[in-house]
Image (cartoon, rainbow, N blue to C red):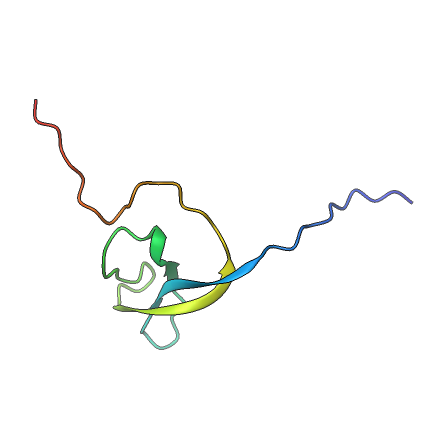
Length: 75
């Protein structure tokens, strides 16, 4: 029989710096290079977060550093 199932490539895993929620039972976390603040709060429960490391697929963030304040243009 024919199968339309696509074969998936193995995604390379790498240790990535993330922010994890400190609240017991909350599973909130985010990658460090995708945060807007230097010390973010949990988007699920608004608790504090701590920096940690997870083994995740590598995702490139092509945006400019989001944590730097935006420079406004004076008109």
